Length: 351
Image 1 (cartoon, helix red, strand yellow):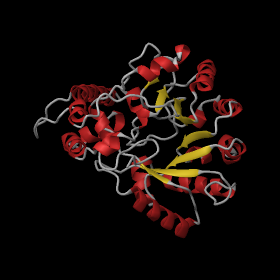
Image 2 (cartoon, rainbow, N blue to C red):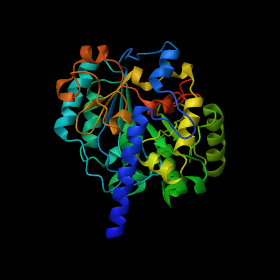
Image 3 (spheres, one colour):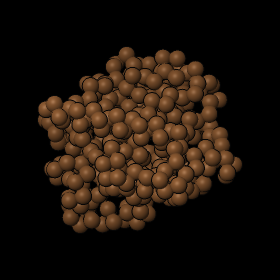
Image 4 (cartoon, helix red, strand yellow):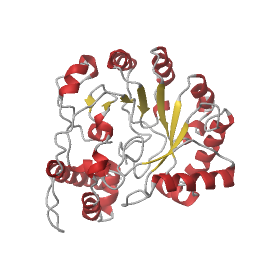
């Protein structure tokens, strides 16, 4: 037990050092990689600012029933960070004055927050049209108390965005844990049964794809067609859209890169795949991210790196839209992940 604890501690220290390297744009053995700021300046795209707040994203807790190897939040059953009802009430007031048309609820497994359902119902009372819940699917079948979630989602017209990193059992279980694929398929069938992902119902069910290793996602359109064909043929499952999201070199995925000694290779891939057209669609241009403890970030990746917004309004209890609109977006080396290839955001490819 002592050796295991020491190894875990050493791993955390190594990760912390690599985080510092990323943020400082350190040189690599393969040569010096340009900082993200430099790349933006070369393309006359710096600084980046909020254009119009459309998406109010809230992470209501890092607790999760899964421990996925690509998770940038480092979520799991042992995480105790959970948003309180008081902070949720502050979020509701901020949502009311923000003008945001979408509220994006994420975690961990957001459904595990004890005030999750109350929060959704209160958001609905604000008249916000699009309420997204990012679900890992397996939580729906993990315990009897979650079995009625599909009906709850339907009653509250929730837009369900579900993680399914592949349409094959082998790849999903490798990335997310044994038995995850079967649980996900069962949950998708339950969602389909109440009308989610079914044409004409208006109940939106989207899926999310993450690469299983240090590579960029393939064509979003091509993967969506593959998913729809395979899931329909194998299980009769239907859904609306597929979002492809690039794994960023932070948190648990960074740990994987370091262990596999592929960190420098992956960073070089992201930098050389930089696409200036992808910058126009990055989520920080229309989104703010609120952490479980109420602090405000430019995106949920900056949240994990504890890079708060460059504004006096950096906590939900002093939310000020005017101040937030004036700020410059904080960007660093990890931002290459959102601008490589076809780009990446919470809504998938940006170009």
